[in-house]
Image 1 (spheres, chains in turn cyan, green):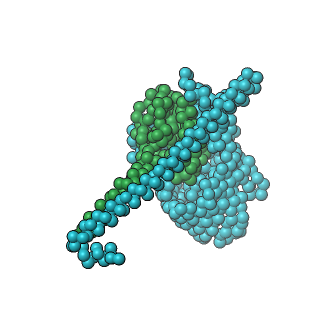
Image 2 (cartoon, rainbow over the protein chains, first blue to last red):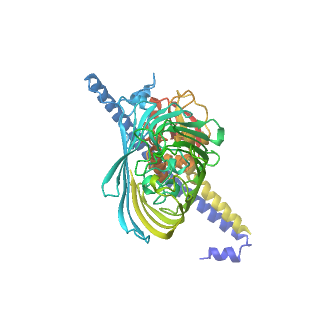
Image 3 (cartoon, chains in turn purple, red):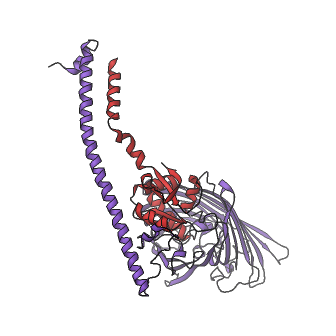
Length: 446
Length: 149
Protein backbone atom coordinates (compact mmCIF):
# COMPACT_ATOMS: atom_id res chain seq x y z
CA UNK A 1 0.00 0.00 0.00
CA UNK A 2 1.48 3.40 -0.95
CA UNK A 3 2.22 5.78 1.91
CA UNK A 4 0.10 8.92 1.68
CA UNK A 5 2.58 10.90 3.75
CA UNK A 6 5.44 9.70 1.69
CA UNK A 7 3.60 10.60 -1.47
CA UNK A 8 3.00 14.10 -0.25
CA UNK A 9 6.69 14.58 0.41
CA UNK A 10 8.40 12.73 -2.35
CA UNK A 11 5.99 12.93 -5.21
CA UNK A 12 4.21 16.15 -4.60
CA UNK A 13 4.88 17.33 -8.12
CA UNK A 14 3.49 14.20 -9.69
CA UNK A 15 0.20 14.56 -11.59
CA UNK A 16 -1.12 11.69 -9.48
CA UNK A 17 -1.13 13.86 -6.34
CA UNK A 18 -4.11 15.81 -7.61
CA UNK A 19 -6.11 12.68 -7.81
CA UNK A 20 -4.92 11.52 -4.40
CA UNK A 21 -5.65 14.85 -2.68
CA UNK A 22 -8.87 15.30 -4.53
CA UNK A 23 -10.02 11.84 -3.58
CA UNK A 24 -8.99 12.30 0.04
CA UNK A 25 -10.63 15.69 0.29
CA UNK A 26 -13.85 14.42 -1.25
CA UNK A 27 -13.84 11.44 1.06
CA UNK A 28 -13.23 13.62 4.11
CA UNK A 29 -15.93 16.08 3.14
CA UNK A 30 -18.43 13.29 2.57
CA UNK A 31 -17.50 11.69 5.88
CA UNK A 32 -17.55 15.02 7.65
CA UNK A 33 -20.91 15.96 6.27
CA UNK A 34 -22.27 12.55 7.11
CA UNK A 35 -20.94 12.65 10.66
CA UNK A 36 -21.79 16.28 11.36
CA UNK A 37 -25.17 15.96 9.76
CA UNK A 38 -25.84 13.02 11.99
CA UNK A 39 -24.44 14.85 15.02
CA UNK A 40 -26.29 17.98 14.09
CA UNK A 41 -29.49 15.97 13.80
CA UNK A 42 -28.84 14.50 17.24
CA UNK A 43 -28.02 17.91 18.67
CA UNK A 44 -31.07 19.34 17.01
CA UNK A 45 -33.19 16.61 18.55
CA UNK A 46 -31.65 17.26 21.96
CA UNK A 47 -32.08 20.98 21.54
CA UNK A 48 -35.72 20.44 20.63
CA UNK A 49 -36.16 18.27 23.69
CA UNK A 50 -34.50 20.86 25.90
CA UNK A 51 -36.63 23.61 24.43
CA UNK A 52 -39.75 21.51 24.97
CA UNK A 53 -38.72 20.85 28.56
CA UNK A 54 -38.02 24.52 29.10
CA UNK A 55 -41.41 25.50 27.79
CA UNK A 56 -43.09 22.82 29.89
CA UNK A 57 -41.24 24.10 32.93
CA UNK A 58 -42.38 27.63 32.21
CA UNK A 59 -45.95 26.46 31.74
CA UNK A 60 -45.80 24.60 35.05
CA UNK A 61 -44.53 27.72 36.78
CA UNK A 62 -47.28 29.80 35.21
CA UNK A 63 -49.87 27.27 36.29
CA UNK A 64 -48.46 27.26 39.81
CA UNK A 65 -48.69 31.03 39.84
CA UNK A 66 -52.28 30.86 38.68
CA UNK A 67 -53.15 28.36 41.40
CA UNK A 68 -51.59 30.57 44.03
CA UNK A 69 -53.41 33.59 42.68
CA UNK A 70 -56.68 31.71 42.86
CA UNK A 71 -55.85 30.66 46.41
CA UNK A 72 -55.14 34.26 47.29
CA UNK A 73 -58.42 35.37 45.74
CA UNK A 74 -60.20 32.65 47.65
CA UNK A 75 -58.63 33.95 50.83
CA UNK A 76 -59.77 37.42 49.86
CA UNK A 77 -63.32 36.17 49.48
CA UNK A 78 -63.06 34.56 52.89
CA UNK A 79 -61.70 37.80 54.31
CA UNK A 80 -58.35 36.29 55.16
CA UNK A 81 -56.06 37.67 52.49
CA UNK A 82 -52.39 37.55 53.50
CA UNK A 83 -50.62 40.94 53.41
CA UNK A 84 -48.52 41.52 50.35
CA UNK A 85 -49.57 38.26 48.76
CA UNK A 86 -51.02 39.82 45.65
CA UNK A 87 -48.97 42.13 43.53
CA UNK A 88 -50.81 44.97 41.87
CA UNK A 89 -51.26 44.63 38.14
CA UNK A 90 -50.79 46.97 35.27
CA UNK A 91 -54.26 48.10 34.19
CA UNK A 92 -55.69 46.11 31.37
CA UNK A 93 -52.72 43.85 31.04
CA UNK A 94 -53.79 40.22 30.82
CA UNK A 95 -50.33 38.95 31.69
CA UNK A 96 -50.66 40.54 35.09
CA UNK A 97 -53.08 37.76 36.00
CA UNK A 98 -50.27 35.24 35.99
CA UNK A 99 -47.97 37.25 38.19
CA UNK A 100 -46.21 34.82 40.48
CA UNK A 101 -47.15 35.24 44.08
CA UNK A 102 -44.38 33.32 45.73
CA UNK A 103 -41.79 35.44 47.47
CA UNK A 104 -38.39 34.92 45.85
CA UNK A 105 -35.75 33.18 47.90
CA UNK A 106 -33.44 36.19 47.90
CA UNK A 107 -34.73 39.22 49.66
CA UNK A 108 -34.77 42.00 47.21
CA UNK A 109 -35.83 45.46 46.35
CA UNK A 110 -39.36 45.91 45.20
CA UNK A 111 -41.56 48.90 45.20
CA UNK A 112 -43.33 48.86 48.55
CA UNK A 113 -46.34 50.43 46.91
CA UNK A 114 -47.37 46.88 46.09
CA UNK A 115 -47.10 45.64 49.64
CA UNK A 116 -49.91 46.15 52.07
CA UNK A 117 -47.77 45.83 55.21
CA UNK A 118 -44.18 46.84 55.97
CA UNK A 119 -41.65 44.13 56.61
CA UNK A 120 -38.26 44.11 58.26
CA UNK A 121 -35.08 42.81 56.72
CA UNK A 122 -32.53 41.68 59.25
CA UNK A 123 -28.79 41.26 58.77
CA UNK A 124 -26.17 40.21 61.27
CA UNK A 125 -22.50 41.10 61.36
CA UNK A 126 -19.79 40.23 63.82
CA UNK A 127 -16.16 39.54 64.44
CA UNK A 128 -13.91 37.74 66.89
CA UNK A 129 -10.16 37.42 67.02
CA UNK A 130 -6.85 37.33 68.81
CA UNK A 131 -4.40 40.16 69.47
CA UNK A 132 -0.73 39.77 70.34
CA UNK A 133 1.52 42.73 71.11
CA UNK A 134 4.88 43.61 72.59
CA UNK A 135 3.53 46.85 74.03
CA UNK A 136 4.49 47.19 77.66
CA UNK A 137 1.59 46.64 80.04
CA UNK A 138 -0.69 45.10 77.44
CA UNK A 139 -1.40 41.37 77.41
CA UNK A 140 -2.12 39.11 74.50
CA UNK A 141 -5.75 38.23 74.34
CA UNK A 142 -8.65 36.71 72.51
CA UNK A 143 -11.35 39.24 71.94
CA UNK A 144 -14.94 39.57 70.90
CA UNK A 145 -15.34 42.46 68.53
CA UNK A 146 -18.92 43.41 67.94
CA UNK A 147 -22.20 41.72 67.26
CA UNK A 148 -24.20 43.93 64.99
CA UNK A 149 -27.89 43.58 64.25
CA UNK A 150 -28.89 45.63 61.25
CA UNK A 151 -32.51 46.19 60.27
CA UNK A 152 -34.20 47.99 57.43
CA UNK A 153 -37.85 48.30 56.68
CA UNK A 154 -39.92 50.21 54.16
CA UNK A 155 -42.94 51.98 55.61
CA UNK A 156 -44.11 53.35 52.27
CA UNK A 157 -42.73 53.68 48.78
CA UNK A 158 -40.62 56.62 49.92
CA UNK A 159 -40.25 56.27 53.69
CA UNK A 160 -38.06 53.67 55.34
CA UNK A 161 -36.38 52.98 58.65
CA UNK A 162 -32.82 51.88 59.25
CA UNK A 163 -31.73 50.58 62.63
CA UNK A 164 -28.46 49.16 63.88
CA UNK A 165 -27.95 47.77 67.37
CA UNK A 166 -24.50 46.91 68.56
CA UNK A 167 -23.39 44.55 71.30
CA UNK A 168 -19.77 45.01 72.28
CA UNK A 169 -17.64 44.17 75.33
CA UNK A 170 -16.69 46.87 77.83
CA UNK A 171 -13.41 47.19 79.71
CA UNK A 172 -15.14 45.88 82.85
CA UNK A 173 -15.98 42.66 80.93
CA UNK A 174 -19.65 43.50 80.69
CA UNK A 175 -21.43 43.85 77.38
CA UNK A 176 -22.72 47.18 76.26
CA UNK A 177 -25.69 47.72 74.02
CA UNK A 178 -25.48 50.66 71.67
CA UNK A 179 -28.03 52.02 69.24
CA UNK A 180 -25.43 52.70 66.60
CA UNK A 181 -27.83 54.09 64.02
CA UNK A 182 -31.52 54.83 63.97
CA UNK A 183 -32.71 56.68 60.91
CA UNK A 184 -36.02 57.59 59.43
CA UNK A 185 -35.39 58.09 55.73
CA UNK A 186 -37.42 59.83 53.09
CA UNK A 187 -36.43 59.36 49.45
CA UNK A 188 -38.06 61.84 47.11
CA UNK A 189 -35.89 61.12 44.08
CA UNK A 190 -32.25 60.77 43.12
CA UNK A 191 -31.61 64.44 43.86
CA UNK A 192 -33.30 64.98 47.19
CA UNK A 193 -33.36 62.57 50.10
CA UNK A 194 -33.84 63.32 53.74
CA UNK A 195 -33.14 61.41 56.93
CA UNK A 196 -33.37 62.17 60.61
CA UNK A 197 -32.00 60.30 63.63
CA UNK A 198 -28.61 58.97 64.63
CA UNK A 199 -26.21 58.47 61.77
CA UNK A 200 -22.56 58.16 60.84
CA UNK A 201 -21.34 61.59 59.85
CA UNK A 202 -20.18 62.06 56.27
CA UNK A 203 -16.67 63.18 57.14
CA UNK A 204 -14.37 61.93 54.41
CA UNK A 205 -14.83 58.55 52.74
CA UNK A 206 -14.05 55.78 55.19
CA UNK A 207 -16.72 56.68 57.70
CA UNK A 208 -19.38 56.64 55.01
CA UNK A 209 -18.22 53.44 53.33
CA UNK A 210 -17.41 51.34 56.39
CA UNK A 211 -19.35 51.25 59.58
CA UNK A 212 -19.25 48.71 62.37
CA UNK A 213 -19.31 45.53 60.33
CA UNK A 214 -15.64 44.53 60.23
CA UNK A 215 -16.33 42.09 57.39
CA UNK A 216 -16.90 44.95 54.96
CA UNK A 217 -13.50 46.53 55.41
CA UNK A 218 -10.40 44.88 54.01
CA UNK A 219 -8.30 45.38 57.12
CA UNK A 220 -8.74 44.22 60.70
CA UNK A 221 -9.00 47.73 62.14
CA UNK A 222 -9.71 51.24 60.93
CA UNK A 223 -7.14 53.94 60.12
CA UNK A 224 -6.15 56.02 63.16
CA UNK A 225 -8.14 59.04 62.10
CA UNK A 226 -11.33 57.00 61.72
CA UNK A 227 -11.00 54.92 64.89
CA UNK A 228 -14.13 54.77 66.96
CA UNK A 229 -14.12 56.56 70.27
CA UNK A 230 -13.65 53.35 72.26
CA UNK A 231 -10.48 52.62 70.26
CA UNK A 232 -8.83 56.00 70.72
CA UNK A 233 -10.72 57.83 67.99
CA UNK A 234 -11.17 61.59 68.14
CA UNK A 235 -13.44 62.59 65.24
CA UNK A 236 -17.19 63.10 65.60
CA UNK A 237 -18.07 59.96 63.66
CA UNK A 238 -21.60 59.61 65.01
CA UNK A 239 -24.18 62.33 65.23
CA UNK A 240 -27.79 62.88 66.11
CA UNK A 241 -29.47 65.20 63.67
CA UNK A 242 -30.69 65.30 60.13
CA UNK A 243 -29.21 64.79 56.69
CA UNK A 244 -30.11 65.88 53.19
CA UNK A 245 -28.34 64.14 50.35
CA UNK A 246 -28.60 63.32 46.68
CA UNK A 247 -27.08 63.67 43.27
CA UNK A 248 -26.27 66.92 41.50
CA UNK A 249 -27.15 66.96 37.80
CA UNK A 250 -23.65 66.91 36.35
CA UNK A 251 -23.63 64.39 33.53
CA UNK A 252 -20.74 62.00 33.48
CA UNK A 253 -19.03 63.76 36.37
CA UNK A 254 -21.47 62.11 38.81
CA UNK A 255 -21.53 64.78 41.53
CA UNK A 256 -23.27 64.09 44.85
CA UNK A 257 -23.86 66.20 47.92
CA UNK A 258 -24.51 65.64 51.61
CA UNK A 259 -25.60 68.31 54.09
CA UNK A 260 -25.89 67.46 57.79
CA UNK A 261 -26.88 69.35 60.91
CA UNK A 262 -26.62 67.73 64.32
CA UNK A 263 -25.91 68.00 68.01
CA UNK A 264 -22.18 67.63 67.57
CA UNK A 265 -19.80 65.83 69.87
CA UNK A 266 -19.62 65.55 73.62
CA UNK A 267 -16.15 66.23 74.97
CA UNK A 268 -16.51 65.07 78.53
CA UNK A 269 -14.22 62.23 79.45
CA UNK A 270 -16.04 58.91 79.54
CA UNK A 271 -19.19 60.20 77.93
CA UNK A 272 -20.66 58.84 74.71
CA UNK A 273 -19.31 61.17 72.04
CA UNK A 274 -22.65 61.48 70.28
CA UNK A 275 -25.03 63.72 72.18
CA UNK A 276 -27.96 61.35 72.07
CA UNK A 277 -30.02 62.98 74.80
CA UNK A 278 -29.44 66.73 74.64
CA UNK A 279 -26.99 69.12 73.05
CA UNK A 280 -24.59 71.01 75.35
CA UNK A 281 -25.30 74.24 73.55
CA UNK A 282 -27.58 75.78 71.00
CA UNK A 283 -24.91 75.87 68.34
CA UNK A 284 -25.40 72.91 66.03
CA UNK A 285 -22.74 71.04 64.16
CA UNK A 286 -22.86 71.32 60.40
CA UNK A 287 -21.22 69.21 57.77
CA UNK A 288 -21.23 69.65 54.03
CA UNK A 289 -19.71 67.08 51.73
CA UNK A 290 -19.46 66.84 47.98
CA UNK A 291 -18.01 64.02 45.96
CA UNK A 292 -17.76 62.89 42.36
CA UNK A 293 -18.16 59.40 40.97
CA UNK A 294 -17.41 59.88 37.28
CA UNK A 295 -19.13 57.38 35.05
CA UNK A 296 -16.17 57.33 32.66
CA UNK A 297 -14.10 55.57 35.33
CA UNK A 298 -16.29 53.31 37.49
CA UNK A 299 -14.75 52.84 40.90
CA UNK A 300 -13.18 56.27 41.19
CA UNK A 301 -14.50 58.62 43.85
CA UNK A 302 -13.03 61.92 44.92
CA UNK A 303 -14.50 64.41 47.34
CA UNK A 304 -14.23 66.95 50.11
CA UNK A 305 -16.12 67.58 53.36
CA UNK A 306 -16.16 70.49 55.79
CA UNK A 307 -17.47 70.01 59.33
CA UNK A 308 -17.99 72.73 61.93
CA UNK A 309 -19.10 72.66 65.54
CA UNK A 310 -19.04 74.72 68.74
CA UNK A 311 -17.56 72.77 71.63
CA UNK A 312 -18.67 73.65 75.13
CA UNK A 313 -16.59 72.66 78.14
CA UNK A 314 -17.44 72.82 81.85
CA UNK A 315 -14.78 75.50 82.39
CA UNK A 316 -16.55 77.77 79.88
CA UNK A 317 -13.57 77.62 77.58
CA UNK A 318 -15.50 77.16 74.38
CA UNK A 319 -13.90 76.28 71.08
CA UNK A 320 -14.68 76.22 67.42
CA UNK A 321 -13.94 73.01 65.61
CA UNK A 322 -13.41 72.91 61.87
CA UNK A 323 -12.61 69.56 60.19
CA UNK A 324 -11.71 69.54 56.52
CA UNK A 325 -11.24 66.20 54.79
CA UNK A 326 -10.39 65.26 51.21
CA UNK A 327 -10.26 61.85 49.60
CA UNK A 328 -9.37 60.11 46.35
CA UNK A 329 -10.28 56.44 46.22
CA UNK A 330 -10.43 53.82 43.52
CA UNK A 331 -12.03 50.45 44.04
CA UNK A 332 -13.06 47.62 41.76
CA UNK A 333 -13.27 43.85 41.99
CA UNK A 334 -9.53 43.42 42.20
CA UNK A 335 -8.02 46.70 43.34
CA UNK A 336 -8.58 48.97 46.31
CA UNK A 337 -6.65 52.21 46.61
CA UNK A 338 -7.81 54.54 49.38
CA UNK A 339 -6.23 57.91 50.12
CA UNK A 340 -7.55 60.44 52.59
CA UNK A 341 -6.27 63.48 54.40
CA UNK A 342 -7.77 65.77 57.00
CA UNK A 343 -6.99 68.86 59.00
CA UNK A 344 -8.69 69.60 62.31
CA UNK A 345 -8.62 73.24 63.36
CA UNK A 346 -9.46 74.17 66.95
CA UNK A 347 -9.67 77.81 67.97
CA UNK A 348 -10.66 79.33 71.28
CA UNK A 349 -13.77 81.41 70.98
CA UNK A 350 -13.49 83.27 74.28
CA UNK A 351 -9.87 82.76 75.22
CA UNK A 352 -7.52 85.70 75.27
CA UNK A 353 -5.33 85.74 73.34
CA UNK A 354 -7.08 83.53 70.79
CA UNK A 355 -5.12 80.43 69.93
CA UNK A 356 -5.40 78.17 66.95
CA UNK A 357 -4.27 74.54 66.78
CA UNK A 358 -4.09 72.32 63.74
CA UNK A 359 -4.10 68.54 63.75
CA UNK A 360 -3.27 66.88 60.44
CA UNK A 361 -3.87 63.27 59.58
CA UNK A 362 -3.86 60.99 56.57
CA UNK A 363 -3.77 57.37 55.51
CA UNK A 364 -3.15 55.48 52.31
CA UNK A 365 -4.24 51.90 51.75
CA UNK A 366 -3.68 49.58 48.84
CA UNK A 367 -4.85 46.03 48.29
CA UNK A 368 -5.02 43.61 45.39
CA UNK A 369 -7.17 40.52 45.21
CA UNK A 370 -5.79 37.19 44.03
CA UNK A 371 -8.73 34.82 44.00
CA UNK A 372 -9.82 34.45 47.61
CA UNK A 373 -6.71 36.15 48.94
CA UNK A 374 -6.23 39.88 49.29
CA UNK A 375 -2.90 41.15 50.62
CA UNK A 376 -2.95 44.75 51.74
CA UNK A 377 -0.80 47.58 52.98
CA UNK A 378 -1.71 50.74 54.86
CA UNK A 379 0.18 53.64 56.30
CA UNK A 380 -1.64 55.81 58.79
CA UNK A 381 -0.63 59.07 60.43
CA UNK A 382 -2.12 61.64 62.79
CA UNK A 383 -0.35 64.37 64.73
CA UNK A 384 -2.01 66.41 67.44
CA UNK A 385 0.16 68.98 69.23
CA UNK A 386 1.19 68.57 72.85
CA UNK A 387 -0.52 71.84 73.80
CA UNK A 388 -3.66 71.05 71.79
CA UNK A 389 -6.42 72.16 74.18
CA UNK A 390 -8.78 69.30 73.32
CA UNK A 391 -6.74 66.43 71.90
CA UNK A 392 -3.87 67.02 74.36
CA UNK A 393 -5.82 67.35 77.59
CA UNK A 394 -6.45 64.05 79.41
CA UNK A 395 -9.46 65.64 81.12
CA UNK A 396 -11.19 65.89 77.75
CA UNK A 397 -10.60 62.33 76.63
CA UNK A 398 -7.80 60.13 75.41
CA UNK A 399 -4.73 62.10 74.38
CA UNK A 400 -4.37 61.86 70.62
CA UNK A 401 -0.75 62.89 70.25
CA UNK A 402 1.25 61.68 67.28
CA UNK A 403 0.62 58.18 65.98
CA UNK A 404 1.99 56.78 62.80
CA UNK A 405 2.97 53.45 61.35
CA UNK A 406 2.51 50.87 58.64
CA UNK A 407 0.23 47.86 58.56
CA UNK A 408 0.59 44.76 56.41
CA UNK A 409 -2.00 42.07 56.17
CA UNK A 410 -3.71 39.28 54.31
CA UNK A 411 -7.42 38.74 54.00
CA UNK A 412 -8.82 35.37 53.02
CA UNK A 413 -12.47 35.18 52.00
CA UNK A 414 -13.70 31.73 52.93
CA UNK A 415 -16.96 32.37 51.08
CA UNK A 416 -19.24 35.28 50.23
CA UNK A 417 -20.10 35.90 53.87
CA UNK A 418 -17.03 35.27 56.00
CA UNK A 419 -13.38 36.19 56.04
CA UNK A 420 -10.23 35.60 58.03
CA UNK A 421 -7.66 38.37 58.32
CA UNK A 422 -4.10 38.43 59.60
CA UNK A 423 -2.48 41.81 60.14
CA UNK A 424 0.80 43.17 61.44
CA UNK A 425 0.97 46.72 62.81
CA UNK A 426 3.98 48.76 63.76
CA UNK A 427 2.95 51.81 65.75
CA UNK A 428 5.07 54.77 66.78
CA UNK A 429 3.72 57.29 69.29
CA UNK A 430 5.10 60.55 70.61
CA UNK A 431 6.70 60.13 74.01
CA UNK A 432 6.30 56.36 74.06
CA UNK A 433 8.25 53.40 72.82
CA UNK A 434 7.06 52.09 69.50
CA UNK A 435 5.56 48.61 69.51
CA UNK A 436 4.31 45.85 67.25
CA UNK A 437 0.99 44.08 67.03
CA UNK A 438 -0.20 40.90 65.38
CA UNK A 439 -3.95 40.79 64.89
CA UNK A 440 -6.17 38.00 63.67
CA UNK A 441 -9.84 38.36 63.00
CA UNK A 442 -12.71 36.20 61.84
CA UNK A 443 -15.60 38.29 60.55
CA UNK A 444 -18.92 37.43 59.02
CA UNK A 445 -21.96 39.07 57.49
CA UNK A 446 -25.27 37.65 56.36
CA UNK B 1 3.34 24.46 -2.21
CA UNK B 2 -0.04 22.82 -2.54
CA UNK B 3 -0.12 21.43 0.96
CA UNK B 4 -0.95 24.63 2.88
CA UNK B 5 -3.63 25.55 0.40
CA UNK B 6 -5.17 22.12 0.51
CA UNK B 7 -5.12 22.02 4.32
CA UNK B 8 -6.63 25.49 4.46
CA UNK B 9 -9.41 24.40 2.13
CA UNK B 10 -9.91 21.29 4.22
CA UNK B 11 -10.10 23.28 7.44
CA UNK B 12 -12.55 25.77 5.95
CA UNK B 13 -14.69 22.95 4.62
CA UNK B 14 -14.78 21.36 8.07
CA UNK B 15 -15.72 24.64 9.73
CA UNK B 16 -18.32 25.44 7.11
CA UNK B 17 -19.96 22.09 7.68
CA UNK B 18 -20.42 22.87 11.39
CA UNK B 19 -22.39 26.14 11.51
CA UNK B 20 -23.17 25.76 15.21
CA UNK B 21 -19.51 26.23 16.02
CA UNK B 22 -19.57 29.74 14.60
CA UNK B 23 -22.94 30.90 15.88
CA UNK B 24 -23.93 29.18 19.10
CA UNK B 25 -21.83 31.21 21.57
CA UNK B 26 -22.85 34.52 20.01
CA UNK B 27 -26.52 33.63 20.26
CA UNK B 28 -26.17 32.62 23.90
CA UNK B 29 -24.51 35.86 24.82
CA UNK B 30 -27.06 38.20 23.29
CA UNK B 31 -29.08 39.71 26.09
CA UNK B 32 -31.58 42.55 25.87
CA UNK B 33 -32.31 44.98 28.69
CA UNK B 34 -36.07 45.39 28.63
CA UNK B 35 -38.95 47.25 30.22
CA UNK B 36 -42.68 46.60 29.92
CA UNK B 37 -44.36 47.79 26.76
CA UNK B 38 -46.27 50.32 28.84
CA UNK B 39 -43.04 51.98 29.99
CA UNK B 40 -42.15 54.79 27.59
CA UNK B 41 -38.50 55.14 28.63
CA UNK B 42 -36.13 55.87 25.76
CA UNK B 43 -33.07 53.90 24.76
CA UNK B 44 -30.45 53.74 27.50
CA UNK B 45 -26.68 53.79 27.40
CA UNK B 46 -24.69 51.12 29.20
CA UNK B 47 -23.73 53.73 31.81
CA UNK B 48 -27.37 54.58 32.49
CA UNK B 49 -28.26 50.91 32.77
CA UNK B 50 -25.35 50.39 35.16
CA UNK B 51 -26.58 53.23 37.38
CA UNK B 52 -30.07 51.81 37.46
CA UNK B 53 -29.03 48.25 38.20
CA UNK B 54 -26.58 49.37 40.89
CA UNK B 55 -29.19 51.49 42.62
CA UNK B 56 -27.56 54.83 41.88
CA UNK B 57 -30.53 55.88 39.79
CA UNK B 58 -33.72 54.89 41.50
CA UNK B 59 -36.54 56.63 39.65
CA UNK B 60 -37.77 57.10 36.11
CA UNK B 61 -38.35 60.51 34.64
CA UNK B 62 -41.55 61.54 36.37
CA UNK B 63 -40.52 60.16 39.72
CA UNK B 64 -41.80 56.59 39.60
CA UNK B 65 -39.59 54.18 41.52
CA UNK B 66 -37.60 51.74 39.39
CA UNK B 67 -37.85 48.07 40.29
CA UNK B 68 -34.83 46.13 39.08
CA UNK B 69 -35.35 42.46 38.28
CA UNK B 70 -32.57 39.90 37.97
CA UNK B 71 -32.57 36.25 37.02
CA UNK B 72 -31.41 33.94 39.76
CA UNK B 73 -27.74 32.95 40.15
CA UNK B 74 -26.55 30.25 37.79
CA UNK B 75 -28.49 31.42 34.75
CA UNK B 76 -26.31 32.37 31.76
CA UNK B 77 -28.14 35.67 31.15
CA UNK B 78 -27.24 36.78 34.66
CA UNK B 79 -23.60 36.06 33.96
CA UNK B 80 -23.66 38.36 30.96
CA UNK B 81 -25.33 41.15 32.93
CA UNK B 82 -22.88 40.80 35.83
CA UNK B 83 -20.00 40.95 33.39
CA UNK B 84 -21.21 43.69 31.07
CA UNK B 85 -23.31 45.90 33.34
CA UNK B 86 -22.06 45.44 36.88
CA UNK B 87 -18.52 44.45 35.91
CA UNK B 88 -18.57 42.21 38.95
CA UNK B 89 -18.39 38.59 39.92
CA UNK B 90 -21.25 36.94 41.78
CA UNK B 91 -19.34 37.41 45.04
CA UNK B 92 -18.71 41.09 44.34
CA UNK B 93 -22.38 41.55 43.54
CA UNK B 94 -23.44 40.01 46.86
CA UNK B 95 -20.97 42.14 48.77
CA UNK B 96 -21.88 45.30 46.89
CA UNK B 97 -25.57 45.13 47.75
CA UNK B 98 -24.96 44.01 51.31
CA UNK B 99 -22.72 47.01 51.79
CA UNK B 100 -25.08 49.33 49.93
CA UNK B 101 -27.91 48.27 52.23
CA UNK B 102 -25.65 48.67 55.26
CA UNK B 103 -24.68 52.20 54.31
CA UNK B 104 -28.29 53.07 53.53
CA UNK B 105 -27.75 53.70 49.82
CA UNK B 106 -30.26 51.06 48.76
CA UNK B 107 -32.98 49.12 50.52
CA UNK B 108 -31.98 45.73 49.18
CA UNK B 109 -30.54 43.87 46.23
CA UNK B 110 -32.59 43.54 43.02
CA UNK B 111 -35.25 40.88 43.02
CA UNK B 112 -34.12 37.46 41.74
CA UNK B 113 -36.49 35.51 39.53
CA UNK B 114 -36.18 31.84 38.63
CA UNK B 115 -37.03 31.96 34.92
CA UNK B 116 -37.50 34.13 31.87
CA UNK B 117 -41.23 33.42 32.04
CA UNK B 118 -41.39 34.85 35.54
CA UNK B 119 -39.30 37.79 34.40
CA UNK B 120 -41.83 38.57 31.68
CA UNK B 121 -44.73 38.10 34.05
CA UNK B 122 -43.19 40.49 36.58
CA UNK B 123 -42.41 43.01 33.89
CA UNK B 124 -45.97 42.82 32.63
CA UNK B 125 -47.29 43.35 36.14
CA UNK B 126 -45.10 46.32 37.02
CA UNK B 127 -44.74 49.14 34.48
CA UNK B 128 -41.83 50.57 36.51
CA UNK B 129 -39.75 47.41 36.36
CA UNK B 130 -36.63 46.81 34.32
CA UNK B 131 -35.02 43.46 33.59
CA UNK B 132 -33.32 41.49 30.86
CA UNK B 133 -34.05 38.57 28.56
CA UNK B 134 -32.34 36.46 25.96
CA UNK B 135 -33.04 37.79 22.49
CA UNK B 136 -35.18 34.78 21.63
CA UNK B 137 -37.33 35.34 24.75
CA UNK B 138 -38.13 38.94 23.80
CA UNK B 139 -41.70 39.38 22.56
CA UNK B 140 -44.31 42.09 22.11
CA UNK B 141 -44.92 42.48 25.83
CA UNK B 142 -41.58 44.24 26.37
CA UNK B 143 -39.48 46.99 24.86
CA UNK B 144 -35.74 46.69 24.37
CA UNK B 145 -33.71 49.58 25.78
CA UNK B 146 -30.23 48.19 25.33
CA UNK B 147 -28.63 45.17 23.72
CA UNK B 148 -25.78 43.43 25.49
CA UNK B 149 -23.46 41.09 23.67
